[in-house]
Length: 519
Image 1: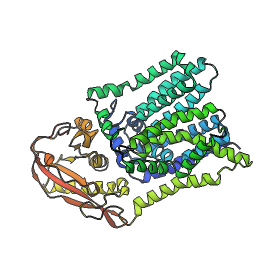
Image 2: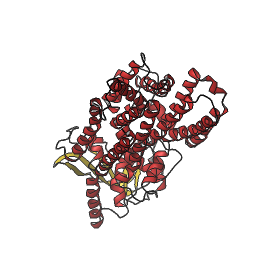
Image 3: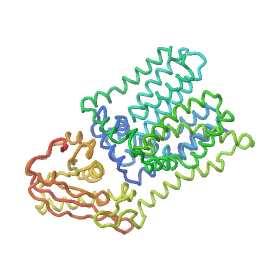
Image 4: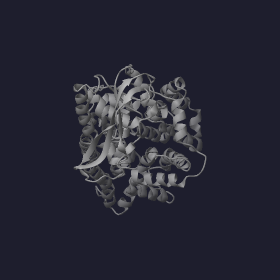
């Protein structure tokens, strides 16, 4: 059977499904925030390295087309490349059939297929370079002699690892896994100057992260340092949330197969060589161990270990292939594979239909905080809000209630990015976020690209009930008069599921820095 062609059709079908979902759903909090990165390219950003911004720039035609489909198109392209690389990895580590199973398991992973293959997140480009790096290391460590081909691969690995880190800092675990394998199994490579040249290439590539942070008081390091930690009071709830999240994000069927493969490795080889098994373990287990340890003390996010679980997919595929081969059965879609692939398919169907037509709210029913806890609201209602606000603003200007050229103001990075994309952009109005660095994130830099508020100008403050915060005195005291909020309802299947609050701020008196950053 030609598994190569089957993988190509798998990629085509999966990509078409992702394109449909990308076109019919609104951007989530994180996605629309990364869209703001692309508005003005930097060498580094408050939260992340810059490649996600470059990816959006490329696939929106340098921001020529900025609809949701095109903003997400780069992630969909990355998902296609990642699936192909997973096939190559499974094929190289065992055989063609294992490669096909690995591609299917990766497509079935919520992390690989949705978070890294549909949603425009740093994980999408990160996984392109992560899997490429894994393929290169497999080739390098399988070389019997350290000849010219191996040395060229080391140089390419240095480039790929650097680009992986410039997508997301988790890429450092590529070098961590490579170093661990060398120290335990291939110390002779420590004499190879190309190893250090490769490391130098990575360091040079990621140096903009350091220089940008040095110019900004190492703000990224300080921010993430407050988010994660390795010591303190043990928080078992955080730890078990991480475990459950990983189990769901990486597909329960896949995770069970991975654990069965790890157990089976103790008695029999699953891959073509024991060295290949060790390589995958060195590249995956350290990342899992570090995140699990952090989860004991701080809140962590399940997708942080996504690259590690993805690296274990070829082992699961090899284990499944070996069991089927013993029975002399090589079905295209084994029963366990059908179960695995069904999960993301069902998830996408439920997600899209619920976002559009679920007739009840899933969050708080308290009127002031209506919808709090309803995650579906992160990807719905914003087009409604944009149209409603546009009508309100035009009416206010026509009636002389507000002056032309008004600004939009928010005080947190979300919903600031949503308001920016769905309200300010179509209305051609400037938006600024005002608050601390911790609250407004990248807007501390984005604000500087907009003309500052001038005395006498009017503005609108926008808030949403599911993340409700009253207007802060630090903003309120900079305007001559504040009017009671106008409430705009979000309807889903005819039911009110969230309130948008619009406050008219009239007669700016000064006091907001150009950056928007307040003490």
